[in-house]
Length: 433
Image (tube, helix red, strand yellow):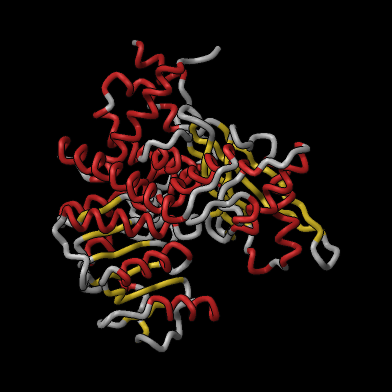
């Protein structure tokens, strides 16, 4: 009777969310469902993971250089604040949707808990193609968006950071706008800022470095030699390029890279730095003379040791998982593997190092930046990289042992660790009023 009444009282699904099983939010919910059997009495709080705490949709009107008025839709989602202030990036992309931002905010909740940072999860975005805006128009969009979401962000409430198509300059505009509106310089309201405005050394390369650190540790546990390892990377922005450089420096071969413009392959290994310079000049790996052209689907069939999806979510589908020939997948992107593909890869004995630990380097160094801003005392890059290595290595060891103990995948192991921490905090805080 109690269960029946609960089902009547509780709304089934969020009305503004797609029911498609391939949607990012559906992927996240499926991941949560898999760990509830391991939560014991804490499972009674599972609904707090299945619903965001706060969703803000804002209109972002600006005057274009032409004098016309343009409107863009912006979002800021706070998924959970049980363990601390919200933390998560802001992306500018023409395909940004509320559902995507919700899922990304939820993954930030899991990620922060998985590496034991004192944060909840949040995410933001604007549906806009920044390449179509002038620098002044981009500044106006950023400042107006910051003003609109200013009612819920702050150094103790919710701290944005860079994400897809956003950078240190955009964080500087956000920090300045927020500071002007509250009447005090507030460097800790965002992370990923320029060094001159309270940014942290090592932040730009932190996510890519984290992919390398966790990849190195996973390969050691799998007895997969790093020296000479063949690596294929999808996505060659900040994360993919920095990870590629670090793996190459450690003796691995970056044999294939694919991005939105095309793909490139070289069996003997691509020159990661030369390829990054080519992308900086031409906007894509397409046309790089240091390798041969590679078709989109061909990328997923290459005979390699490691595949690194470092682009957008939902890239590693069931069909691609069936054809994958790697031993290890390092999820540098958020949500790149759909749940069905997880099952296929597990059946084929291909290890997946999940995004919530693999790409956590960025948020860890963002945490360092936030702490440094509060104390106005800044660490050297060597100290930051050392602390990052220690936190990620320790977190991965805990997740790995949890997965082995329960005989589950690393993703489920990471979610067991994270969800237990989140739900314990929620349980101890109780409900008010």
